[in-house]
Length: 124
Image (tube, rainbow, N blue to C red; front, side, top):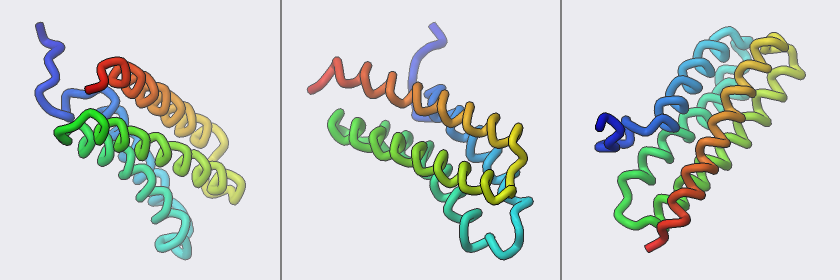
């Protein structure tokens, strides 16, 4: 079949989250040095939290826990978007680059919502 989910690594939402993390690390690498422990660090932590929570939730034994971790991942997307907007207003990110990152995060948020809705229909 080819569509079997054997691991969280097989989830498209996790894969897209990992791509977003890589993009975030690349762009925050050009932030001012004074932001290494500030906004840059916050943005990176929020981005990493998204696929990390998707993976952790997927590996939990109970559906309720999985849904909770997906909810946390969704919150991390909102946090990331807010921090990216701040970086844009501070002119740390070019407008077109910011638009691309926000488009990626918005798509990821939709995928998380869809997964939560699908799982919610199969509650224990």
